[in-house]
Length: 315
Image (cartoon, rainbow, N blue to C red; front, top):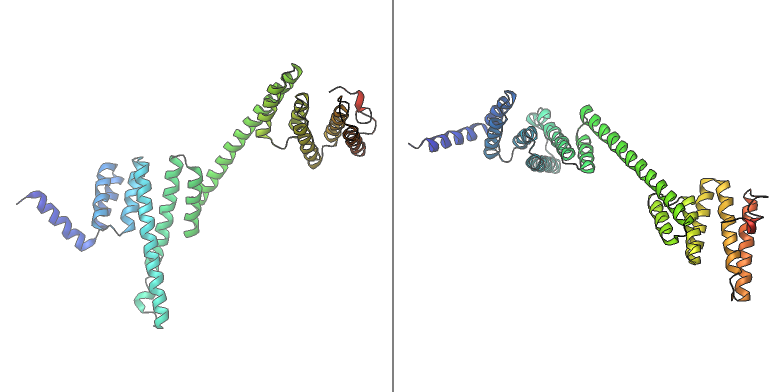
């Protein structure tokens, strides 16, 4: 007789008698003894023997995780989760039909609570394992969602601790990255200032724009770019940046900066009013806008400084 066929018959008999339980037990013992490859072979037999049993896929996922075979572990987790969901739907449908028929609960149904709870616990464990795999694969957002789903299905102090630790680590990394960007933005602001002094206005605008990409509501960066735009004769862009800078300074409660920006905005309109060839009506409007900016600066607290005497203050 062919030994391989004889072995196949033995395995088939085992499947018919016990499903994948025997193979799962063998896999657990193999892993406990440190033989991960043998454990994998056992769980692969279990999955073939009982392909609808989520416990088999959960076991193989655990072995794949131990072997650091992330993609295969993730696939096994997903397979097990789908099977758990199918079991849950089947039980819900059975309960619904029972209610519709108006039948009483049998003793057999009422004494098997532990088995009914198992799919939820197992599914939660599979989601938790999936979260661990996704962390290893660098998908932090996906890992957090997986941990959260696990906790929705079953409370676990271990999973909750893992989720909280992941969130803390992510926030710490995000804050470190943010601080690095803020430092770079500050350096761009300094570069822009030096470029402005060197009369390299387009390059100064670029530097201030990079800084604003990090802090789009920075009143200082907006004010500095407005001044650079003005030197490039881009008065509309300058006015827009001045207005946004004023709004941001006012929102932030920085009255000293607010006064400074209003003074610069007033001097911009005076400067534009003095451009040769400006029509009288337009010149008058610009002077009125300048006076309005100076008045707002005085009201904001710039009583005697650069606002009232703004025409003599250098840019």
